[in-house]
Length: 259
Image 1: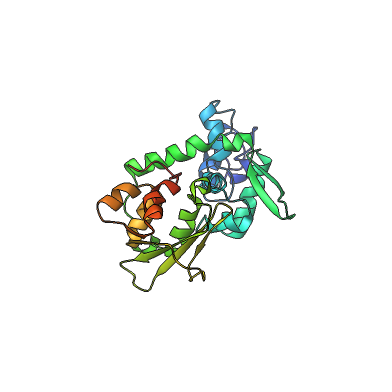
Image 2 (image 1 turned 90 degrees about the horizontal axis):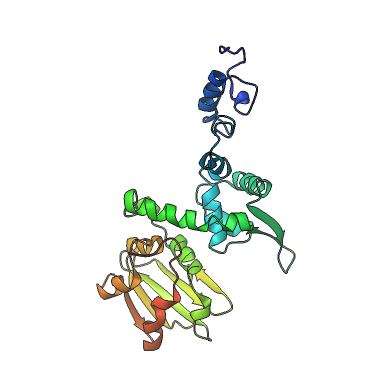
């Protein structure tokens, strides 16, 4: 089909500067069903907001930035933190963000590939957390049943641990889920590293945290504050008194501050 300016109205003209306004509009709408960028050309909307959307305005970009902000560096860790994205699509997004200057690829101390935010990418941090805070205020509720996942919640909680506030020795925390008697999880914490386990790690347990799975997800999402949850009984913490006292201070709620 031809538009009034004589160009074929197809998504391939979404990026064409020579296409007329009608064709560009049709191509932009059609492009939303393809893998093409669906932002209007900059010549039509000369605006910093428009330029920003060009850079980060797809579903996965800010989530990828979130994972890097939370400390993931290797491909598998980034992929684990982004349920629903294929490995192929994640590879493409990482390449795109390298091209746009938001992500840099390098090698870690063992020669393995890793990804880090550039200064431009790191500068997105306030936007990422403010977006989460906005969504929590207006669009975010309790998790659906299909969103409840013990392994995912503990792995995410591990990312919030402040290793600089941990005891100098290893601490093992067992999570007991009241609504799933057979579903336990463990965090193994030390100043050198932290890990989340869905099977017993083989060390003596120092502390037990009892809650239900939905509350664990609310804590991770920042919808519930750990101090309030303990005070109201939604979370119970038992074990070494010094560890129990300090436990809330070990966690930095980086999605958005709990209310």
